[in-house]
Each structure stands twice: as C-alpha cells, then as structure tokens.
Image 1: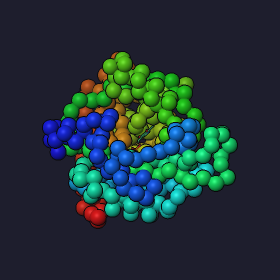
Image 2: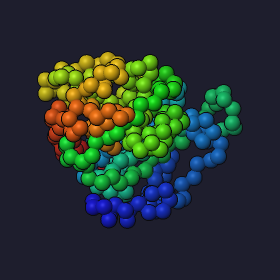
Image 3: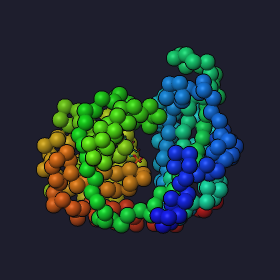
Image 4: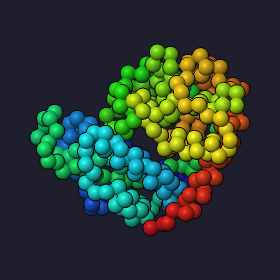
Length: 305
Ligand code: PLP
C-alpha cells in the first residue's frame, strides 16, 4: 500500500477508519458501534492483557506463538480465557478478510469484563474479548532507513514484565520522555543494566556475539525476539542471554530493537552516543534478511481464510 492509500485508510477516530470492523465478544460490528461498559475492569483497573499480531499479504505471521503468549499472560493475571486460543486464532483468520487489508496488525485485548468496581476479583466474570485490524506501510528493506534514537530512562516497572498486560503507564511515561526530547524510543535501565525498551526488545552485537537480556520478571518474551534468536542459531551466530551493562551498550558494534510492528530496527544513537559506524551494521542486516526469509516462508504456508 502506498502512503496516499494508507492515509485514506486512516481517517477520523484516532487514526482508525470509523467503519473498520471489530470483533467483540463473538460479534463483528463497525468500530463506531462497538461498546464496552464503564464498569469494565479493563477501564477501571487496566485488568487485562493484549496481543499485537502481524500479517503480511493477508496472512498471519507467528500466530501460534502470539496465542501461546496470550494464554500465558491470561494465566498470569488469573483470568480464564472465554474460548480456547485455537478458537481465537480461527476467529482471527475468519475475520482478517473482512478488514480488507493486506499488511498490518491485529490488536487483541482481553479484560476481566464488567462488574461492580472492587479490587477483589469477582467470583464469576464475563471477560471482554475484542480485536480489530490496523494497516501498516510496507516493511522497510533490511538496513534501509534512519536508525532509532534511544533515550535511557529508569526502569520503574513492576516485576512481572513477562505478562503482556494493558497497564502501561510506566511505558507511556518513558515513551513521552523520549519523544519530548526528540528520541524515538525509551530504553529501560536498572542499576546500569539494560532490560528492554518501552515497546520493543533490545539486542547488542559485541564482536561476533549477539547479546540480549533474558525474558522473565524484567523483560517481555517478545515474539520477534524469539524468531531472531532462532534465526541467529540457524546462522551459527553465538548468542548470550544476559543483562547488558550500559557501558557495553555504548561501545557495542551494533545495536538493534525488535518488535512485531518494527521487525528489526537498527539503533543509531544511545542518548548522545553514536553506535558503531552510525549506520546499520552487517550482523543486523544479515539477521533482518534471514528474518524476512522466515516471514516469506511462513506466510506462504499460512492458509488464507
Ligand atoms: N517489550 C515490550 C515492553 C513491548 O511492549 C513489546 C511489544 O509491544 C516488545 C518487547 C516486543 O514484543 P513483540 O516482538 O512480541 O512485538
């Protein structure tokens, strides 16, 4: 999709086409008609989890991995899924053609549903599950485009970062710090150790070794991160999953971030420090090319609904 048709798709309603369809609790309705109650615990307490799943050419990429993480996140907040993840995946496959988009992502949200406001979890609840699609411009070619500028901020998040929960206040504040100082993304630092960014995972290339923080309490198990680690293993690249010191990051040969919507994106600057040669490095380009091959192979297999 070119820039003009993309902007035609994104009009009104906070950038989303008003009549775009949304799947909500088993019904498909125009977005403007979808309603969630004021007492929904997602609204009251951010008591919910979410997923962002990419599709290329009308076909999902790593849908199974995203559904597995959704199940883990839901279990992490002690919320039983209203329908099995296999059925959610099938509903998403059935829904995608209705969105009439070639390249984009599905945003999915699951909350504990509506009930009288009380911190105590309700004995019985009726979860709210919804998803809809949004367009993305065609992905950049590996190594092309501007690098990302990272601003280091204190990691003040909770210790269950493996749960992809909708309570994102610390991430939003960090992003705002970055944007307001003309950076693109915030990178969290805890006692001089790098954890991850506010919307992505982070990798450093030190010599011929790829290093990234282990997932768990402090880092979301990013699906793109998972694919990158797998691709790196297949390329015979040495990988270390350990915390990176700020000093190492500043002197890294290459630095890149990963996420579903950004794939692999090279980092140009960490605070005021240029990384490596100040352009996309060879290991990052090589991994991004291999990642793209993986996307092509998997989306060719994914059965269009
Ligand atoms: N870390 C955080 C805090 C994120 O919010 C995200 C994506 O939203 C990621 C990492 C990357 O995860 P994924 O590759 O699954 O998109």
